[in-house]
Length: 322
Image: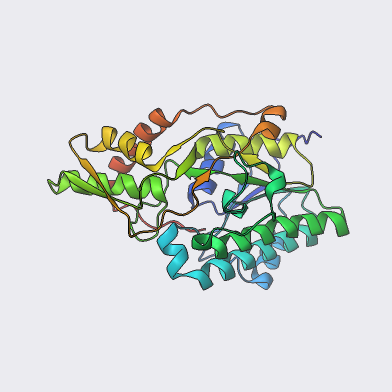
């Protein structure tokens, strides 16, 4: 199913200040789209249905990228469970409902690979959803994201809305959150190595054993995939977005160390949780749809650190939400 999105179409990116939203705005601009709609948190509380409906009525978006949300790593998920489930469920609900109310032509909802069971068969296919228990360290966020998928399916089923869902793997890149208390593993490691180098410390502690395996996708690749799916995907089932290639946290830490602080030695705090033992997505469905990642991890880490250094030369990299 192909969707022709005109260059002057009104396209709303919900979450434009975040890692993913910022990348999608950049990609849309590069592609020549001229009518990109955004709204800051001060302008629009995405948890408030009346505000969101009023904004949709006033701005009438035709296409929506729903990539807004409250995000974070293991520590953030563990210490702020109420925020993670409330904020995300409300944001999904208000934007999807307003998109139905004001006849949005197509909506792409972005979830997360944490929707899958902790013991899912690897590589994880889309059919693994709801086939087992979730990873306890991020179940609040995962439940909200699963609800988002089902929300889109429900509006398709009852109202015939062209709402689709994509589930990306672990993301990184320009615009990421490097705060040590709330960031994901790759930016957190990059920040630790950077701080150690700045402070003359040659030992960097890694949470857990270093053995869990993860897959990483550059956010610019994800933005490209989202545009591709908006134009070329129309199924009810969600679709995985990733590289299909994983590595251990130890291997990831070594790659980051080699770029940021080559003299550093790694130590492992095994009292900290590892999370899911392995998580790599099966991307056969996406590949068959005509898209494949193009940014390799080594060059992605290097360019992300260059961006981080540019930010540090000005203001401290700040927290990113929607």
